[in-house]
Structure formats: C-alpha cells, structure tokens
Amino acid sequence: QVQLVESGGGLVQAGGSLRLSCAASGRSFSTSDLGWFRQAPGKEREFVATISWRQNTAYYAGSVKGRFTASRDSAKNTFYLQMNGLKPEDTAVHYCAARDYSGSTYYTQWSDYNYWGQGTQVTVSS
Image (cartoon, rainbow, N blue to C red; front, side):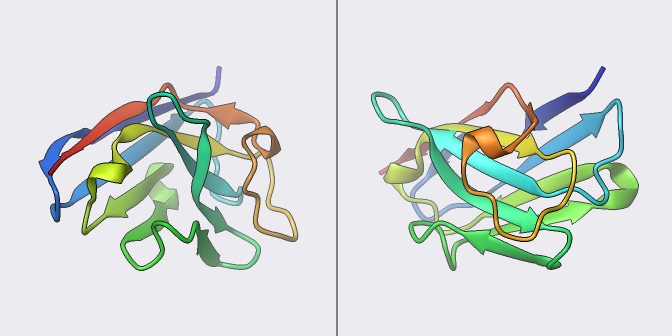
C-alpha cells in the first residue's frame, strides 16, 4: 500500500521558516514527479511547487517563488519543501503528492497526481 506522510508543519511567526517533509512508502518515487499543494480556510486548493525528475528542476507558484524550495532525497524516498520568509497568507494545510512517472512538463493540477498525503497544518502569525 502506497502512503505519503507529511510532517514538519506548525506555528511560526511571519518571516520565519519551516521545512515540510513527505515520507513515501510502498514504492519508490525516485523517478517520479512530485508536488506540493495547499488549501487555506475558505479557499480552493492551490498549486505550490513541483519537482520534475525528467527535467531535473523545480517549478513554483508565483506566490512562493524565491521563498520556497522543493527538493528530494531519493535514497530516503522522501521529499521536502523548505519554506523561508513565511507570510500570514501562507497559512494553510499543505499536501504532498506524487505521480507514478515523470512526464514532459510541469504538473500543477491536483488531478495530475496519483498519490496524496493527508496534509500538515502551517500557521503563520503576523
């Protein structure tokens, strides 16, 4: 059974940092595309970041570009979202996601992914 389990969320002051982890089990995602999404209260779920294995690069939503960094550790079957310069508007439940394979583009839709974590709360106080 494939599982993605996020950790690392919490409460932080504006300007602070958090690192989210997403530990995968049940299969290897070393050559898969990986993604991060978030959903704030009363808002639709939105794309945050994705890592393309085929292109060996990451792509970010404009709202987080320059502040967040997505990465992976294939040996640990774990991927990360380093969040710096956090703002109150980053407050949301953050989710990791994984595709079965790597594609030819950056995947920014929730439905592009095959597996999803349960989410971890990130709260940024002003």
